[in-house]
Image (cartoon, rainbow, N blue to C red; front, side):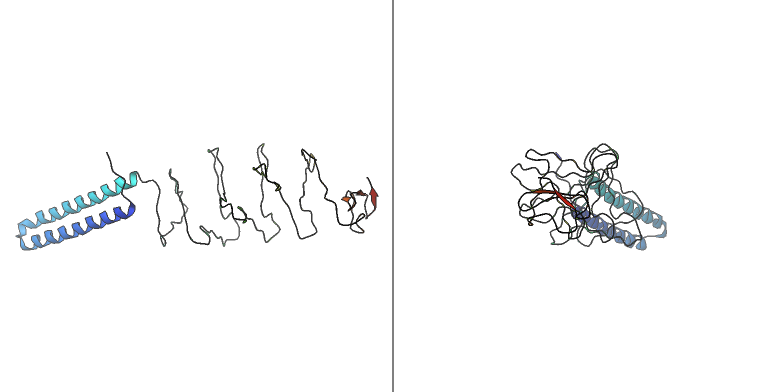
Length: 250
């Protein structure tokens, strides 16, 4: 029965020991060759070649045994990252774990354009990117997107029959919204647009739509545009026909 595979540290120690032994054998063989007769020089050189070949074979054998069944690559702090255009393909998982209270893995691009991180799959039916926040005491977002320009902070596009963006709350006891939108500006908290369908569609057990009553006892005094709906403090429903012209519906 085979024992556990040696680690890379053990492999390094074995290689160092074999190299030291090779150096010693070469020094011993060299001393013998210098004191021997000239006709023995060819034999000494031949012996040194044999020793070198045997030692190299031993090093290669040790490395081959370890690398052939190695589960995953291990790296220590300060190890180098190999860059280049080559496809570093493999059939084993690569794991990165950090105990530091900062970024575990950071990528930065200084080029004029291009994708910073690109993940793709053409054959797998699994999830391409998965992020999990397993600390129940944490209030930090699991995925955070920040945009300093006019682009979307988070963007989803579906080229198949699936939804572009989906929000789902699993616990039945939760009262949290599946999708939440908020803004400090004058735009809408949530906006929907459909070129060939309806801009929004709602289904609910208690109500399809809920308009939270405002703090005013009547409709807004300014800012109303055509299509606005407003429920005042007294639960009366108002509809704006445009230019802040309101009509009470209920």
